[in-house]
Length: 123
Image 1 (tube, rainbow, N blue to C red):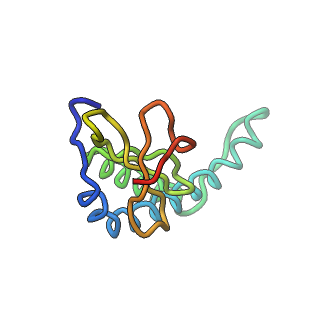
Image 2 (cartoon, helix red, strand yellow; image 1 turned 90 degrees about the vertical axis):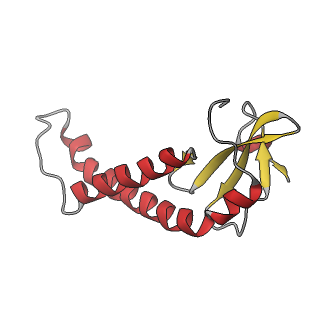
């Protein structure tokens, strides 16, 4: 993480409206892709053939675009379904992550690189 941008709480909070939109798009695309893959999982033991449902390829493009946007900003997506993300940051001169989840009004937690969501603490 040392070469990545270290977000401040204010910077992270300023991105919440944009991230909320992006994370809903990621979640919806993820669900569409999983649903589109379902017929292949059932057919795999036989011939593996089939056709993706309408919207599958659009969902793939949406997922790629939105993930590239997060990666380009240095934001780490931890869970597409819940919209859990981490912002690389610094606290008391050490590398940490600011932790935010879709639906929360603002960034209110942080955790060390080893502890993850279970170890998040209030700011």
